[in-house]
Length: 220
Image (tube, rainbow, N blue to C red; front, side, top):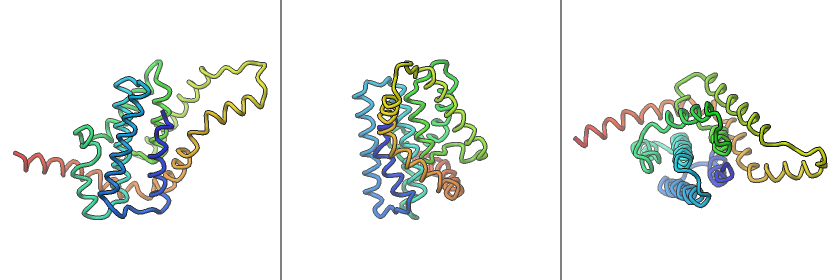
């Protein structure tokens, strides 16, 4: 599943490495296109409904955070009023839900490995969710726990035959890594800017709640 984040990683990388959002409407259109692509691919792979929902929610949460980091002034305010998570799920608390989902999956006796790898990619690209209001240590611990669980699960699955050659093992490893190289690059770049952007994002995310409240009051 993590290979489905290829184009999302391209977008995140382009902004994290010094890019800028020059046209908010076009950026919104691109984010919607990415969400549509993910939805179609998940359906094509016949993923369970809960997995499809969690994967799309995590992508929307990531795109919302990216938008709040890089959109200017009025465009940022407009996005806060109607983020991707509202467009797709009619919620304002994707940050909490995604992290809750990660923690819940970690505690399953037989979790979906591909979904855990997908979550690792989302976190690697800088997604913070509710951890933006918590200590850096908590987010670091969550990432470490996810990595540890994935290593254990992969060890249970990978049982190389004694007759395997080194060349075959290397080839197999490269085939597994190939679709993930770009996402890994995005993760490295995103981590480099994560600390600098966390305070700004904290302020912007905190405004989503009040904006929601104002909207509800005005609709009464």
